[in-house]
Image 1 (tube, rainbow, N blue to C red):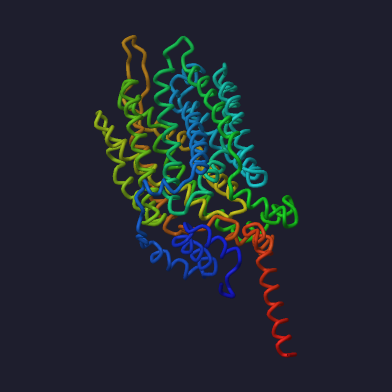
Image 2: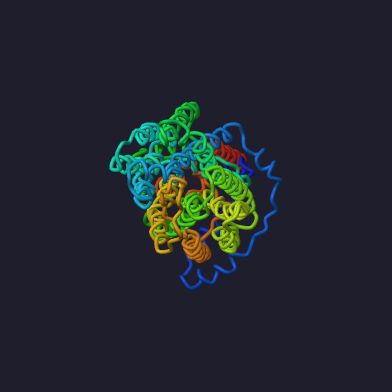
Length: 532
């Protein structure tokens, strides 16, 4: 061991071989970029974008690296994130029915979507701090209990005002889940498998959308209760997910962190000190992450929330055709997120995001102007690109976020980005009214107003893609960063090297004492020889 190497570093390196290679690159990039001038940093944006081309293990081999507990953590995180998306998209898929029920316009109903996105940042702050302070488990369970209560409440709304009120509260509940899910799934994950696990986790969003689309076709307007059964059904699966989470412990990374806090000045005091250090050291990074997530959320919501309305209203698709198109689009999303997330382990996080955004921009015209059934192919590949970029995000945020507040930073940056993009569907619906088309007249002579939503979505997403590309290019990257407490500089600054070493390497003091005893015995032997 060199004089510059800590016991904590030695222990982790000796006992966790998966931390070699990429992990050092991430840690070194983090240190170097923090000490650069602005001019030098901007110069490195070109050189650091070069793909590292790290050899990738076979994806099956990557997945085989996870042990049983790590797979269970991933599964419960994926299930929660899937149902978060399912519950969110229930409104997007029933806009027309809700407007008819409450006798308001499509524009008015999109405020239900906007309010959820606006209030999710409140939930991410509250539940994020709770998860970083008390653990991943119980905040997650409380989140899902609120899902059950509020989804049932939405299904029993009788007025537009009740609908808006419940959806606003629902936003708070939904806001706390993403950061917790990402931390649960990834922080114990082997380094080489993080890219593909990140891509798979993010596709819980697309899978939730897929399930919502399928169940909407089966439950909406198929009974005398109209749209309500979809919301009532949405309250049931979280019961099973809660039971699943209760059967699992806290992650190993969180247990180690709590042990260090307890061995230092106490869990509560150390946690507060960690917050002060993280804010002092990373305030600029936090602002950047919010701006980045605003672009990503504009990209996803701008391409998805009003798209079913475009298919139905502008392209005159039947309910079955809308369902098929949405299902195919989400299959594309799930494929793209997994593939691009996996590829980012070799190509780099930023390079992968930029390339897939360029491709997505090139596909905007067929995605929004093809009025025949051929749009299904365009929908597949456009969502491949949108969710392909998103597939990199869970691991990209986890690697950039300060370790002590990982859940808070990942969740809050994501949800504040949601807040910034919360008016996406409202903006598109409002702008679409400036491009009217010929009314749709039913067999009974009922007139339905039609608008050219495709033109608006195309222009809107073009600007969003450009924004995301520029911001990703300018931003940092810590691909392969170690996530254990032994490599957490903020925690080391607060708790000290000794306390971290005692937790990470419990035999350290005994080994040190043995070394001291050996030196004393040698000294005594030398003294005896000299006396003789």
